[in-house]
Image (cartoon, rainbow over all chains, first blue to last red; front, side, top):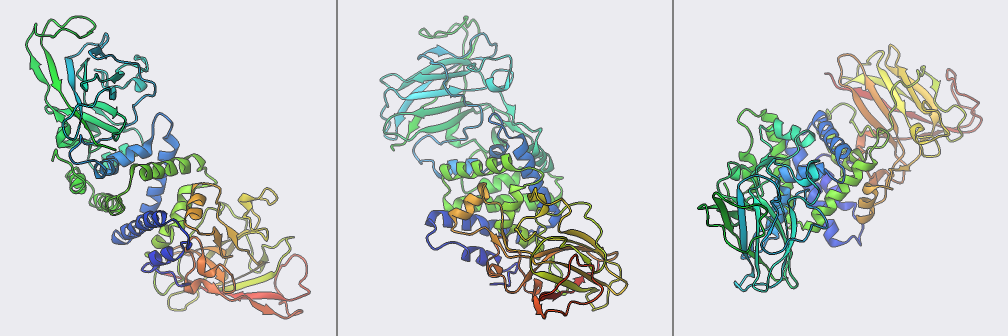
Length: 288
Length: 288
């Protein structure tokens, strides 16, 4: 054992585990270390590259705050967050997608037909749909937590000109599973690229853009919580989301509606004189 | 491309690279990401485990300071630091080993035959040897930066009772490559285990001990710098160094010497009335 070599070090690492180690802890730590070792061996990683990697992690640690988590962002741009999401998605339910860092706790209540647009200008959007189970049956009274960017591309927590509840709302679907609200079209935006993750994106010749999307967290008793995002099919970044969040079933169409057709029963602030868009998107939950 | 799946996400990641990306950057980032993805797929990594991993990195970031680098410690206990060392060692030169966090800049000059022991008690050790090249020829006037623990198991930077230069010395070997100094025997010690890396060690049923050792950095014009450590063959942790630093050729024997045999020419503080130990260890540098 004394003679640790580059070829046997993974076996030596494995031999160090205590006999009563939790089997899952051992499985995960050993797989992680085996892949890290194989990575270093395959690339013949140099001291300078190793040091750069450590400096990257130190930098990420220094700029991480409760509001900005550079490690989550790293996981996002490497596709790890999306991969973990996907491998725990249920095939015939709505796909999950990345939570992102812009969710707020205690979002304001949003009634069915309520308005998230407030006084903001932008393309008016009417979003509606049904929360249902994998058999197509409506799930009554599901809770839907909704959030998105303002038309300036910023979430409320990033923007001093918005109050923290701007473009956030918590809706309870009706007894038929129906939800509906008005808003303005969310916009494409960039992930923060002024830190170490931005350096990686630039070194790789990548852009920091995400296609525009609406965020949802949907919960109902007896069902798995769904954390997801939905994307319009005409976004220029749809095929190159820098955090790999787009799934086939999360792409929807904003259908242009003629002027004067805006329906009754919505509490839109201001009137819609011109055209607007309408989106129908069902949210399908998997049983627990 | 829109349809990112858990099976194609690594290919999608690869397709995101810009055309003029530096080939080595692409090679390293792609290999790293492929291994991270494979790790997540093989273990079917869960959201909770992913979140724990991120919390680990955040915690490591919070407690990392210029004096304590938890990311380097993580790399050490996973064997990555040693692996990178080993794959750039030269076969017929002295093996390199981990630098560790306790080196100080501007160590005090230590003349040949000088003393690092000062007023500390402990088993007196006479360390000597020759700096030579791979053909056995002495390298004149190499610089040797030496450091070790005090008998209490602490390096100077960890111990308020020692001045920062305690158990550090910078020696210039003579024209025959000879170096020699006196000290007290370094002792086994634990790596810091009160942070997230300590949690990993405990979860894996591992101890935080390192076998005792002397650190060397050896430099000479025309030769590769050597960063290494040497270990006594009677240390109880020799076969289970928690940072995987031991190599066959770095193990030496402390040879017990009879009382009254202490040689002339050493500037030992105090006298050696009883027995002491003597170590002969040559340092072999590889040509640049």
